[in-house]
Length: 113
Length: 113
Image 1 (cartoon, rainbow over the protein chains, first blue to last red):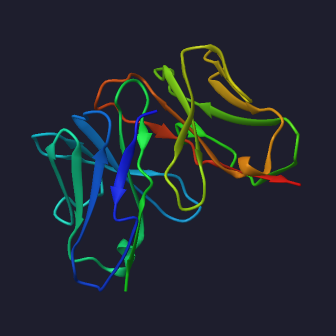
Image 2: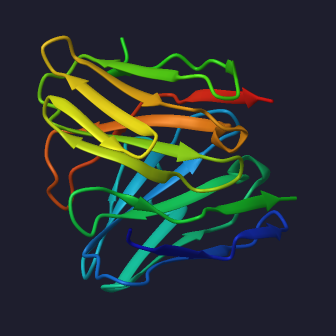
């Protein structure tokens, strides 16, 4: 299957700082990537669709100024959590669709102190 | 009513048992169906992918889709402790690059020795 990587795998930051998470497609090009967040024992919640060379499309209720998405190349999308607060602590996962099915990254665990 | 319903479990079975995991859905537009396995603190891993109705087998896994009943299943034969994970069903009307997946809540499976 296709390989999607994320970096970092976990990050701890202080409240008020910004954190950048990278999502890379390693063996295919992805014009579209998806960003999810997942709280413990819950399913994935789609945050936004990242589009290469254009603005991301955000789901209802997701603050686009807080969760900045940049899809600058066909293999890299970044999610920046700006002015992070403890309630932003979560598991962030990206995915991409090289063909018919979606492949997910390993996730990034963010803890905001 | 959620678009996709999935029993959250937990489901506990002895090693070697046949496991049946199920999802029901309400949107008749769904055409593509996927099953993902997610270990704790990891990203979802694609197990099975099916299009429209029918069966698909891959090793110990069999996926079934019954569009007339809006019901999909994943069967795991000869279950192993390493199968202990959360299983997520997902579906989408089409596989266009921006088409979103709709997930079930996930079923936690525990295979005991």
